[in-house]
Each structure stands twice: as structure tokens, then as C-alpha cells.
Image (cartoon, rainbow, N blue to C red; front, side, top):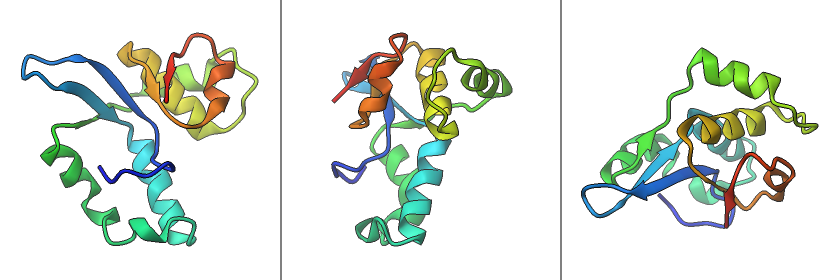
Length: 117
């Protein structure tokens, strides 16, 4: 996907049988990117925003599931952080058993989640 320090968090796992890495992007990340484009905080993404799901697929990534169990895990995490989107991202990383790739240091306050970047 488009490289930028503000990229939304993703989960990256072990190498796949194709030699690449398994990369999962939460549906919440698409929501957050769309919000930032809509309110003018990330205008550079404007030309790409509607094509992000297909760009992810073209680059070998996958959309992570957002099942009710993940939503409940995010809601009930023993973590003082209140941002619902961050809680869902953390729960997705835990569910996938993968590190979370994010520049947001708030994930350092949740020891159960391994953060890269």
C-alpha cells in the first residue's frame, strides 16, 4: 500500500509459502484512512482511498476478519486506553497472533501486543 509515516496499522506474520509475508489489514484501518481523507488530514491518500482494498489484494495482502469475538475481545481488554479503534486493532493482532505494525506508541502500553515500527 502507499508508504507514509501515517499509514494505518497492519498485522504482519511469518513468511508464507510464496516467500512473502502474510499481511493483514483490519477493516478499521480502511475506516480510519477514509475518515482522514474526508476531513482533510491526509489529502495525499485521496486519489487512492477508493482503491485500497484492491491495492491490498494486488500486493498480496488480505483483509483481517472483524468477527464478534474480536469486537468483544477489544471491548474487554484489560487496557486503560479508551480509543475503540485502537482497541479493535489490538484485539485483531492478538486474534491473529501477529505483531501490529504501527507508528502509534500507545500500543506499547499493552504488553500482550507486540508492536513493530
